[in-house]
Amino acid sequence: MIYIISEKRDMTTDLVVEWLISRGKSFTRFNNNDFVKSITTISNTEDHIGVFANAEKVWHRRGFHSVLPKEIFEDYANREDYVRYVSKEAMRLINYQEYKLKENLKENYIGSLMQESHNNKLVNLSIAKDVGFKIPNTLITNNRGELLAFYEKFAPLITKDLRVPVSITTRNKHILSTGVKQINETHIRKLNDTFVPIFLQQYVPKKYEIRIFVVCQQLFCMAIFSQRDEQTKIDYRNYNQLKPNRCVPVKLPAEVTAKVWAFMDKAEMNTGSIDLIVTPKNEYYFLEINPMGQFHWLSQNCNFYVERAIAKFLCDEKT
Image 1 (cartoon, helix red, strand yellow):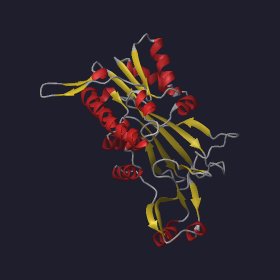
Image 2 (cartoon, helix red, strand yellow):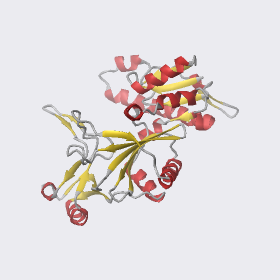
Image 3 (cartoon, one colour):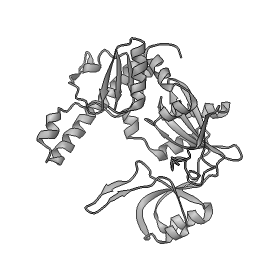
Image 4 (tube, one colour):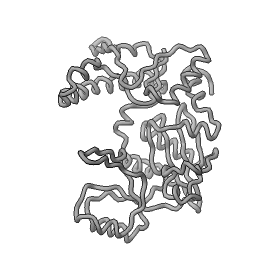
């Protein structure tokens, strides 16, 4: 049986499902927070992972299924402490099910909730450096003096979130972060002497950016010409909806491809979206990886049909 774990409104999952249906393939899809009856046993003779016991292929696209009945959230709507506690308990079971499935299925399990939950930009930068990628000079500090010294040495600098964008709701306002931004000395001198640690990198001039989607032992690579637009010059994710960046397929040099696979191997990932920068000197800089990153726009812009490749993998067809 093929199992897909995703979110109800994830377009890419819908497209893969269409390919599976066109091939007459049976599958079970669990959307985020769909309740799944779970009987999991661990004994000296055998282990059993409930509904997934007959799994042959699993694509963990996004989110996770729920082992908590919806009545828990309804009956205890005013008890956030209780809901938070049982949710943490349930997550241990969900993580174990993934662990056991991956142990049994090995390369037939694509994706990982645990890797997404624990994805660490700093660890990934360290791994990228270890396998031979160049990385931007990086500082994480809670001290203004150290930040000023770093600025004087490596300006211009950019800053961005280490994990997820800011989303804080107060009584009077909703605070949101605004992606990758360049900072200057005026910004720094407005800070207190000490503050919450912030993530900064030396700005690396680029000829273009590359988005790589890794899946099914394939690399789907797209060049993004963000440098030609002032709005997207710092980062293509400062999208210009009126005049989108030109995006085209690109082939990586063999040595860069080897580094990508070395990174994936050392990071123990089998899928994800990787962002690189190519400098005017044709140097390749690693920026980050998102284990459950979006890929539909890459597939669509470059006619890669990534969704078909995933469906073929799930159907045991050769790509």
